[in-house]
Image (cartoon, rainbow, N blue to C red; front, side, top):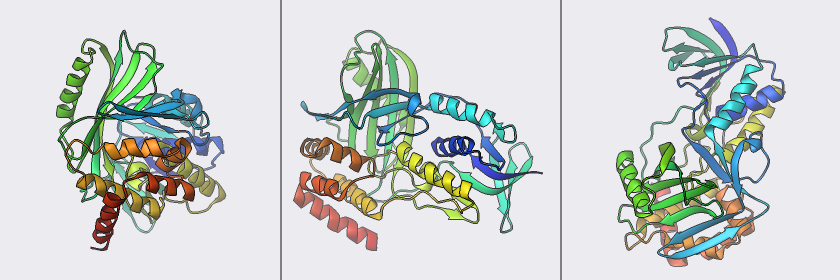
Length: 378
């Protein structure tokens, strides 16, 4: 059996980010990547505010300096020239990662193969693949999606998106982060829009819900919204959809097996942003491996997890139905743009957290805090 120093399970944002850094830094070990799909593909986008440069900066499809949230005709527009909001296509990130991997003839990319089972007698790991073959790896970084059951206050973020091409789609408007709908489905529903280029726009329908809704039903609702906007006849160039767990997934790093990406807890529970946090983890993890240290697992600040739980609990409690977007509009309106960005990207200063807390309605948030604290102790 072929013996590798590292096995990367799944070619996701975390494993690609680590691989690119290991190639750039001249990692001396051998790496195998096990990926069941053929690449590159264009099935998703990663977005967020670029607080620092990263290896995929040049792959950004578009950046914006302004963004907006809205509900029932009330709109708040904010912006920053220092921290652009960026969109990265999965296909562009994958192409860069695959090009880097191809420069290492001692590495192996097993495309079209999936992991069936794994066993270890302390270490190394024996990995059996779906074609009956086996390999050995000293360390495993596993990015496969986790199987989860979420309990209150945590919810699923489910979305369906269509990238439209056609006339009347301008690119001079801000990113529409959340345009909340008067929708009685729990807990809230909003439209997300990225004006990518003249004649091209990504429009998504997103729902925060206790249970994963039907993606086909979300898609049908989105199609109705597009029809109401006169966009029913525009060409659909690309589609994306997923269910994201808005929950603080605990890190797993035992006996040389580490879960990474969403599976390892890199996703921010209250926002779903993960890509830029993954970049910070990959920087540290690659440095550890190059120095011969045990690699660090993804981590989050416990204070941020608690605040996220309080905020999501407040959504569970919000009445009347269809009005849960109001606190978001109020939050963006009352919080300075840079403070808001740092908070959303999990890098807040203490003063930023103070701004956030002052911007939210005190009585509902206090009740949510007490309820969430009781849940955490149960």
